[in-house]
Image (cartoon, rainbow over all chains, first blue to last red; front, side):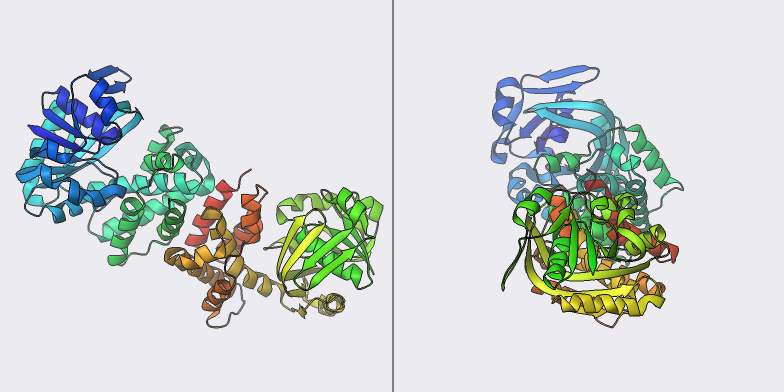
Length: 302
Length: 302
C-alpha cells in the first residue's frame, strides 16, 4: 500500500516509520526535516531500542509523491489551511484519508475538501517527542483508536486498524469517532489548557494545586455535559479517573504547553474554540472554558 | 493633626504629600525610598505642575514616629501580615486608622487588630505611578470615597472627608464602605485580572478583543450577582458603563499588571480570593472568577 504522510512531526515520523518498517511504501512530505532525513534517514528511539530507516522516500512537494492509497494527515491543526493546496496531488478517487490530529473539526474539514473519498480519524494516546530533525522519541507506546467519519465506512476503518496493528501499534476500532474525540478533549481541554494558561507548567503542578485541580475538574464536567447534550455517553467516575491517570504521569509536558513555551502556534481553535462553539450550538453553557479560551487566544497570539 | 503614612508607594506618597502641603504634620514610614526621601524630599508630578516637599519627616521604624492621630495604611495588601508588628507603636486609644488599599478584607483586618479604634476605608479612583524613589506621578486626579468600617462612625468619617478635601482631593463620604469596595471590584476583578492572565496587557487589548471583552462582562456580572446576594444594589447598565469608561482609558496599565510584569507580588487574595470566598459563603456560583483566580494564583507565585 502506498501511504503519504503529510506533516512529519512526532506523530507523522513515528507512525510512518512503523508502517514502512512493516513493509508498506511510505512517502513522507516534509519541510524542516527534509535535508536531514535525505542524508541520514529517519530514527525512532524508544525505551526498548532504536529503529533506523536509512532509506526513506522524503519529499518537499506533494506533486513528487503523487496519488496514494492512504494519506495520513499529521500536521498541527493550526496549519490546516495549507491542506487544500497540499493534498490534491496525493488524492485520487480511491484514496483514503486519515487524520491523526488533536481536537475537533479535522475530519470534517477533510470531508469538505474531499466529499467523495473515505475519511477516517485516529486518536493517538501516546507520549512522543520529535527530539531532533528526523528523530522521534517514544516514551509510552500507548494506543490508537481509529474510526470512520461516516458510519457506513466502518468496515474500511477496520482495515486501517489491521494495517496499524500489523505495524506493531496497539490499535482499536472505534465505531463512534466523535465520542473518542470528546473523550480525548476531556483530558486535553483542562491539561493542555491550564498548562499553557498557568504559564507553561507540567501536569503535576496542575493536579498538585488545589485550585487548578478543581478547575481541571470543572472543565472536564463542562466538556462531558456538552458531549452528553450532543448524544454521547460517559461512564460514572470518568473525571476522577482522568485525575488519577494524570497523577500517574508525574511531570508530563502536554503538547500544547511544549508548543507554547517553544514559541510555536498552539492548536487553540481545534482544542478549545471548536468544542466551545459546538457546545454553544447545543445550548450548553461553558463559563470556565469560555474564560480559558479567551485567555489562551490572547497569550498564544504570535 | 499628626498623620502616619504606612507604606510609601504611589498612594501613600501622593496623599501624604498633599496632606502635608495642606498643613498637616505627616510622618512617612518608608523602606526602599528612605534614603532618597531624606536627601531630596518628596516630589509629586502632575500635568498641572509639580509639588516638591523638601523637608519631610521620613522614618524606617514606626517607633521613631510614635502615636498618631490618624494612620493611613497604603501598603500592598500582599504585605498585610507585617501590620500587626508595624502598627502598634503608631496607634494609641484615640488613633483613627484609614486603609487606602485595594480589594476586600483590609478594613476588617484593621478592626481585628485594633477592635477599640475607629477604622475607615477609602477607595481611590485615581491614576498614579511611583516613577522613581520618592517621586510619584499623577495622570488623573480622580476622587476618593471614604467610609466607616462600622456605621456608627459615619460622623468621624465625614471629618476625614473634610481633611482630604482641604488638601485638594475630591473626596466623597460613603456611608456604605462595602458597597463601594464591591463597585471597585466590578472594575478591578476583570481588568486587573485579565490584564495579568492574558500575559501583561493593557486595558485597550481587553476591550479590543471580542472574547476577552465578553469575559470581562461575564466577570462583572458574577461580581454584581455576588454583591447583590450580599445586599448591595447596583444601577441598571453598570456593566456597559464600565466597558465604556475603560474604552476611554485607551492603553491603561492596571496596578496588578504593573506589579506582575515588574515581578512584584500581586494582590491576588484581596482582589480575587476574598470576593470569591464571600460569594461562595453567600451561595453564589462564580465559575469564571474561579478559573481566573486559579490561573492568577499560579502565575503570580514568586
